[in-house]
Length: 384
Ligand SMILES: Cc1cc2nc3c(=O)[nH]c(=O)nc-3n(C[C@H](O)[C@H](O)[C@H](O)COP(=O)(O)OP(=O)(O)OC[C@H]3O[C@@H](n4cnc5c(N)ncnc54)[C@H](O)[C@@H]3O)c2cc1C
Image (tube, protein in one colour):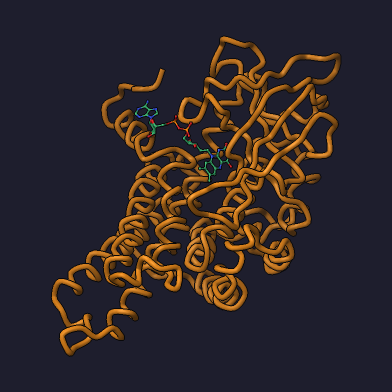
């Protein structure tokens, strides 16, 4: 067993780390106040190959392995979870889904533009009455000559109002749940397609989150991603990649929470000595370190499985569950280490705490990851 990174992986890590330290981290506060980061950042990331890490070069990607992909999310997540969320959706939920399920024509049409940052993609699964129970979506796809008419509403969609293209999941046979679902690639300019920005979030303030409205949106049959009836499988395979991205980003968040805490503990003086000298403070730092390292190893293990071309659902769910909870624990602990200052927006922990809170909700809650792992252990599914 070799735990070292390859030269190529080290190169991408050093390159993204430099980029994130210079172009993301120093601006993250001002972007969260503005409720957006500059669109140009995505072009820059596209030029450097960060938007298409595991996508083959033929389709405009960098054609690197899945550990490299995790490293990109980790380093961007270290700097800001809003930018990392945008990137995760673009690369894991949209590009990799098109790569796996798309026709040659769809791959050639969409992937180069998504990898370069010219286009932004979003993933439209969740609806007002269907989140964890994704088979229960109410958006319909009705046959209309040689095409389809899509109608319904999606909510909580990351990149929703920025997106040029949306993967939309719809029901072709109402009442048939998973069996009748289909996925479609919908250009945002198609008549009947509108979006609205969602506000009032606890964290991830610079990440675009929107509602999508589809009012008899006519799409050709060639926009279908996968077969009719395969939509649920398309969604679940996308989430295998998406959860890996979230878990990787959370390793970065956990590491950031640890680093700012170590630095603060060495500087802050109480009882005439740096608080880093107190064993109870070291206990917190040690716990944060263990959580960070364990999360990273689980992510890299899942990445190894992905690199072998094996089904990664279980290792990804384990990594997602652990890394998201670890990021939340570390952000909370960072506030504790900072004392009252941890409660202030002059310091980072409160932002890490707010931003990490969503990680155990989106792309399958912690409870859903437990049900997936439990189903694998027992052979009994808790899902209907
Ligand atoms: C900032 C943000 C960005 C998002 N981005 C996207 C996106 O890009 N695309 C997209 O499609 N969605 C997105 N989502 C939606 C997200 O994936 C859902 O919120 C999530 O899957 C949970 O669904 P829900 O909110 O409907 O909660 P519910 O499904 O209503 O769950 C509520 C609670 O019940 C629990 N629960 C539900 N079912 C069970 C069960 N069988 N057993 C035990 N407990 C259960 C859940 O774990 C949770 O604790 C985003 C959400 C947020 C907040």
